[in-house]
Length: 306
Image (cartoon, rainbow, N blue to C red; front, side, top):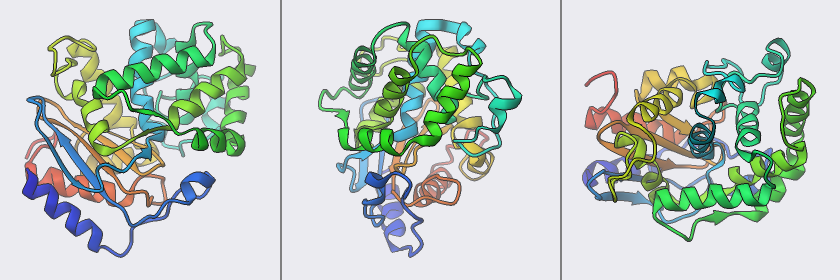
C-alpha cells in the first residue's frame, strides 16, 4: 500500500496541469496549487500517508457527509421530507431546481441541500451549540481533539457567499426553514470551514468503510444499512454534476469539496482522503480525482468489480 500511494504522489507532483484554486472564496484563492496529499486508513488501524498529509485544508463540502450523518441520527427517515436523494445534474450552487421543486433541494450534498440539513439538525438551538456538536462529532470520528474551524475561511465565506445566502432565503420563502436564516447560514458556513488534514479525514470516514462501526471500539456510529445509504448518496451525488464521471473513472463513493479535498470510501476495505487544491471546471480536485482513479486501478477496489 505504501508503495502504491508513494508512486501516486510522485506522479501527481510531476503533472503540469494541476487545475485552478477556488478564486470565488478569497481565502482559498491564496493557497498554493502545487500541493498533494493522500492518506489511506484501514479498519485494522493501519494508516498509510504520502505527500503533505499533515497540511490542514478547509474540507468545505466534505463536511456535508458528517452533517448528513447527524441529521439521519436526529430525524431518521423524516429527513427525506426536507431534502431529496436524486442527483442534481446542475452546478452545486444552482437555484434553478429549487424554483421547480418548491424549495426542496434535490439532495443533501448540493449547497441548498446542505443548508436545509443544517436547518434540520439545529432543532431550535443556537448556531454556536450546533457547531460545538458538529465539531465534537468530527473530532470523535477522527479521534483527534485538535480539529477546529478556520475562522478566517468562515468569515470569508459569509462575506462572499451571496449565492448561498440567496439559496437560503429562497428556500425560506417556501416555508422550508424552522430556524432563523442567519443562524442556519452561520452553521453552514462554519461547518464548511472545518480544517483537517488527509490523515484526520481518512480516519473520520472509516465508519463508512466498516459497516457503520467505529473500528477502534466496535460500537456503531450508524447502522450497516444507513452506512450503505450514505455511501450510495456519495456515489450518486458526491461530486455534483461530475458525479457520473467520478463513478465512471473511480468507481468508489466519494465526496468532494472546493478546498481541494476528496473523501472516498472502499466499503469493507478502507477510507481514502486526497487533497490537491487545484480544481477542474466543475469544482472537484483535478489531481485528487486522477489520483483516486489510479488508486482504484492499482487496488482493484472499485465497487463495480476489478
